[in-house]
Length: 77
View (tube, rainbow, N blue to C red):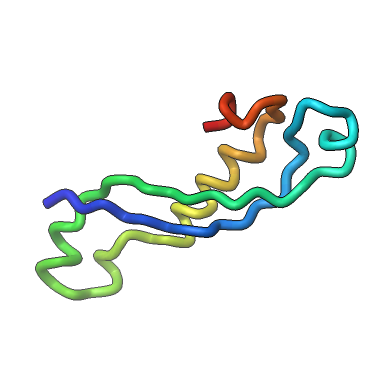
């Protein structure tokens, strides 16, 4: 079974932007994530070990947003 996982309001400080001030000083970005995952085992067993690892999902999203600098937010999405 596929399920949609939503994580809203993830706060990430990064140095994206078109201006030199944005690149130098950085700013806080708020990210809303939505992804699909296989939740079959978690739904069937109600066991934490079968659940989606939200800490890992957040770490992957943060790394993707921080690994490269973007001038435009449209390019970061």
